[in-house]
Image (cartoon, rainbow over all chains, first blue to last red; front, side, top):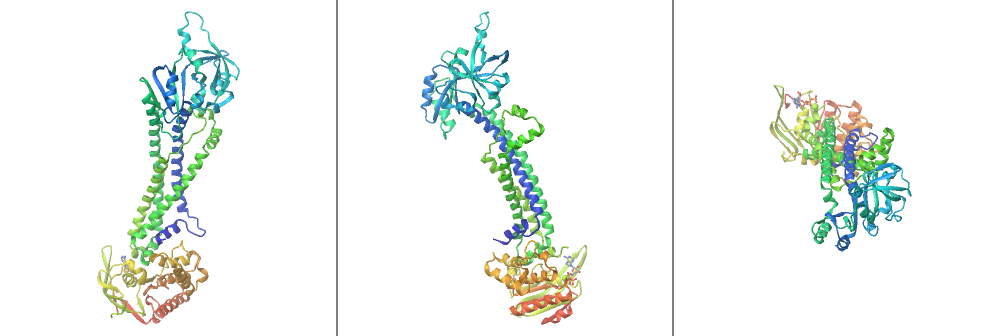
Length: 408
Length: 218
Ligand SMILES: Nc1ncnc2c1ncn2[C@@H]1O[C@H](COP(=O)(O)OP(=O)(O)OP(=O)(O)O)[C@@H](O)[C@H]1O
Ligand SMILES: [Mg+2]
């Protein structure tokens, strides 16, 4: 180990009883900056990731839609299923309903599922919190948890359903609602879906919306490891004209762009925290150089070159950067790991847990850390700390041994 | 004198202090042979430290030439092995214990192996600090610190030791012990010693005495 490396280490972490305050303070400042970046970017990345998961969990990675309705959906599903990379496909019908329970109305989304194939794409079974999906037939529905709670509907109760079609077909008479039983309750974990959705069989949805044997679209599940965009392109090649497959990224392109922009802005702003930490490191190292002027003179007298002396101080900046970044990553990952406990503790103190769930669409704080973001954070922290070491290093190298030794 | 370890000719040094020029050295000639011990005396402010810094290659003269062992190379790289320096202040590195302070001289030359480690311990034992090897400078007395500095100056087996008032910060008895050490070690290793001192008794123990006066040797 060259002497400047050794001395830099010893000056950062002296043996013996003296607590290295200078080192601790600079390491802590870098650490806090890095931690902040990791936590904020993880949570912001989590929002994007959560949205992807929600879409993929409930609709598959690829959606096939037509201008208007898809007529011969059985043959479409069959051909799509034969495309390499496709794990499963299921048709669906969707729309808005009015439901009424004990004179309380609500206007939920409707999703008609093909019970024969839906599990190939979406494992809805694991989201069931009451009742059962198996009990779902053409005279029953499954409700999202929020809807069941807000109207106070228990499993087994009977609901009345009105559709827009009934307004058209009224012919001056009284509107007769459709009565269905509640077979179960689902909780997917996404506020928007959970607050107000009615799941029913495809047949019932087709009846309610007068679709005959047509559907609104087909959801496709991609095989693990297959690229969604590639598979979507392959599907498009075999689809009839007017019918197109979109990967979830296509469908949410604008939203994802905004999310990414927001994250990059956040990263840019928070990097200033690391910059401030670097300035702190620099000023502490400058004080160190001044404090050690006579020792620097001595090193020169012992035969150390100016470049080596500069290295010795620059390395201390690097050392602070490395230790601070490592500690910041560790702390950041720990906070991310226990984020929900932390948030719950805070909301318990301040109230407003419900509010948060409603406002942010998620009942739990999501997190997702991208390698790219981590690389940027680590590189930025290390580069800034190194730069913070260079200024004091140049100052130390400029000292002439004689003058340094003469200094009082 | 071809076998001179240290030879200086016509060394001049002038300092500018504000708009006053202080001609400190006005042509110093000096030749010191191998194994010689030379004492330099002079009033305070006569330029002894200035001269020693020039001889050590730490500062450049305004005029004159300097050679170590016949070669004009007095750069940092050569200083590591050619020269050992002891100052009035001890200049130990506070983060390092006594042993590591001695080893620091070796480190600047190359990463120390077990041979260097052994030599550093031997030197510490020679200056009477075998038991204090792992003590930090803060826990050593002034005399003990100067002994560590002496051991450090000898670490790389230099040809020449320059000592600038090594006893200046020490009491009479402790100072005497340091001079004993320096003279004893230079005799044992046949190392040349140039000693700047105010103390006539210390100077008298050297093989040659020089008096710096008016920027020249009288
Ligand atoms: N860098 C400098 N700038 C200006 N003047 C200087 C400088 N270095 C030394 N001097 C002057 O040169 C003169 C000689 O200084 P030097 O330190 O060599 O004296 P000295 O003989 O070692 O004295 P002492 O016995 O007190 O240590 C002094 O008058 C001092 O003020
Ligand atoms: Mg002096």
